[in-house]
Structures are given as structure tokens and as C-alpha cells.
Image (cartoon, rainbow, N blue to C red; front, side, top):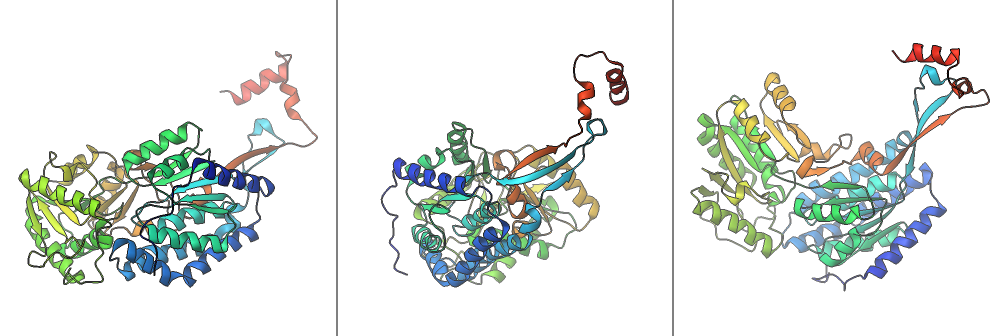
Length: 476
């Protein structure tokens, strides 16, 4: 695929404003698209993804200078297509007005909630999963009947251009529009008066996006990240736990917002887990150099950042284990590393890692492990490995996180019937499936009364006997 290595020139504020105005005008002309029209939008998007999957895989590979085709199929195309199918199947039910109860004191009347599109939705897409994290929110916004503007990442220019071409082919620009450009374009994009803005990316940038949106009182959904912990219990089989953690940590070379960021291991099992993790990684990737299954770090800046984390940890006393010490480095393929003897002074224990580096933290008793987690910012994901139901329940009751996987990693994100979103520094709001439909809809409360108006019995002047009776019956 002969895509250029950089995006087109910067899109000016005037261009963005004109696109936004066109979408708002189009929405005004069709403020409540019927289910059949929305399903057609979703179907067209699904068919385009299937028809152009080879080009999309190649574009992502080009941007990463080495992205496993199977990982793109597994982590980008599969959840995108499944999410579209799920929305198509359930859309009619999601759109149906829901009946609500009316209190006895306000009868006769009926109540319901109707779901209306918000209007024009903005979506800011990150670089780590540049297809899925565009298509997933787009699916929810279209299912809810909105117009959508997407700001695609400047760090993945080939993918951004491929997605732009695909969407321009199937949607008019006043329904779905793609915005390309560098950081300043993203800043201007966030300042538009959207009816809702969804951002996926770093916590630091999320703060800036929220500040820009606040000027217009634009509601935001922030999908951020943070340090997602994994807890290994005292009795879970180590080979099984290590394999599942290794899969979650090495998929996309750890460049995943819900990748396990560190592992809490019982002190007496620390060395055994270290060995089990090394075996698991080598089963998944017998070699790193020239292995098409192992994805590269996205760009030199991110590779340098990860190397600095290793250097800082080593300088402050950590034991750093390169799991492929005898292999030559090739390109930006950074081998998985384990870090032992870490402490809070190390940058690797302060920042989200976003790469194949895994610190191991020993603990004495599950209460201590939970206290360690609760003393830190609330994570986007939490993983517990243990088959004891009491231990599982203790973890669920005594921690806060965006989502939880028991005895696995990552896969909760792929469940269309589960909400996805963070809490506190790891984000706010959620989407996917029905929850995404609700995020991009206005739940309009409707109370309906007909000719007979019992409420007039409590109108002024006050002090009537019937009013006193109503107060006596209903305020007690």
C-alpha cells in the first residue's frame, strides 16, 4: 500500500466549523432517523470493513513498521465487526420507549422515557488501536442516530487515510466526516460545540480535552488509562495465570490501555511466577527478531520513552530481566522485560507503561494487595487470578476500577453487552453496545395526562380539606 508517511496539511478552524455547521444542519433536517435507516448505516460500515480488511491490515502494519496481521484481525477487525452486528441485532429494542411508573398521587397519567439522538458527536481516536477505537464509538453514535466527526491520530497516517477513504465512500460528509491533522487540529477539534465528545488517550491529554469542552458545556466521555493491576492469588496454578497475563501484556507489544501494568504476587511465589511468565512468553513468541506475530513499538519517541523507564528502574536498584537477552535488537521490536525489586520512586511505577515491561510486586496476604491498589489512582482494569469464590468476591467488593476480569485479561473489553469505561483518572462515562447507545442518546422523560386533571384539586388557594388529606396520606 503506497500511503504517504504524513498526513495532509492542517485543517483550519474555518474548515472544521464549516463541517460542523453542515452536520448540524443535516441533523436538523432529520432529527430522529428511523431504525431502518440506522441499521443501513451500520450494515454499510460492516460490509466496508469486511471488503477492505486487507488494505486496513496493511495500513496498520505500515504505521507500526511491523504489526501482526493476526493481532489486527483479533483486536481491531473482529471486535469492530461483532460490535456492528450486535448493534444491528438489538437496535430496535434499544430505540423502544421504556414505560415508567407514575406515583398514585399524580394519577391518572402515564410516563415513559424516549431516546433521541444528541445531534453532532465528536470522537478523538488514539494511535494504539486506530481502527477499533474509531469504529467502536462510531457504531454507538450512529446506532443512536447522530452525525459524527472523527479526529484520527496523526501518529498513524496510513491508517487514518485508509479509514478516511473508506468512510467517505460509504457516508456523506454531513453524516460522517473524518478530520486529519496534527496536534493543533486536535485542539481546535475539541473546542467545537459538539453535543457530546468522546476522547480516548492519555490522562494528561484528557484533562486538556475536558477543559476545551467545558467552554461549550459539551458533555464528555473520557477513555483514559492508568496502571491496571493483576493479582495472582496464593493458590492459583501459576502456569495458567502466567500464560493469560503474558497474552494480555504482549498483545500489541503491551500498547493497550487495559494491558496488565504490574502484577502483585504472593512473596513466596515470586520466583516461581517469574519463571512461569518467562516460559509463557517464550511459548507465545519463540523469538522476537523476524517474528511476524510480535508487534513493533509505534515510533522512535515511544521506544525511547520505554528505554528510559528501563534505565531509570535499573539505576534505582530494580532487577531488569530481558527475556530474550541473546537476540539482536531489530527495528522497534522491544522484547518483553520483567522488573523485580521495584519501588514507588521509579518512573515505571508512576506512569502508565504502555509497552512490554512488567513489574512484579510481592505481597503478604490479599488484604495487603488490595490496600496497595486502593492507595493508588483507580485503574481502568483490574485482573484477579484465583478460583476461590470468596477471594473473587473480596476483590470485587473492596476495589474500584473501570472493569474487572477474573482469571483472564483484556477480554472484558470485547463483550458487547458490557459497558467499557474508566473511573477517576482512568476516565469517565462508558460505551459499547447498549451502554454506548445510551451515552449518545438523550433520555427524554415524558409525562402524559389527558382530559381529566386530578391535580387541580391541589391548586391554590391552599388550606382546603382535600389538600390536608393528600399531605397526610403521602407525606409521612
